[in-house]
Image 1 (cartoon, one colour):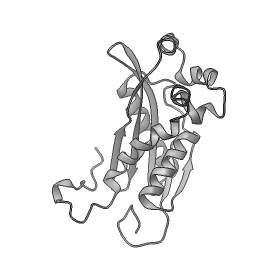
Image 2 (spheres, one colour):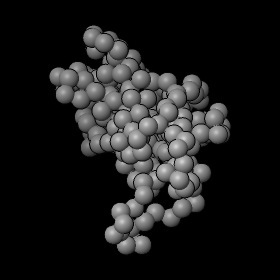
Image 3 (spheres, helix red, strand yellow):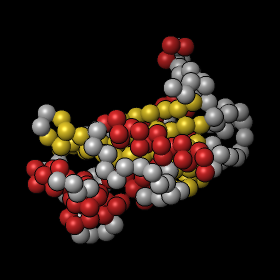
Image 4 (cartoon, helix red, strand yellow):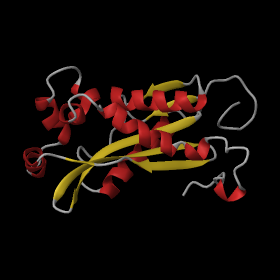
Length: 195
């Protein structure tokens, strides 16, 4: 079944991500494959987002911008995805989060990640104007720091940036999944609602 139209078909869904970052592409590939089976995932370069979103709203706007840019670049795709990571001050602590925005021809799904607190020394460096990516590039000395992220270092390898993004990608997909046969109408998403 084609997830975009709900009709039978063998064409595999084409997913375009507003980034070429390996962690984002991996999270999208994994979540879409779990949800729909065989999919094609392509990343594109996107210019125009903030280097370091510092509020929840800026992070959401970055994800929305990336999803719109993916759609503008590849209008013939099945899904367009934007993922944006950011930081935000909460109760005097600098927290890391991410927003995911996924659109298709029928609507848009959104989800926010869990959050985690940055160590004081990292928070101080980010507050002084550095990006979290810049700090991470100096701290993570093994592998690709863009894929592993600072979370890999903080968690002793238990989590990576990709695994951090996977859950909100899956949750943003909820509106696109076929409802369980026994689900009442109140538990179904409206089609065509983009707001």
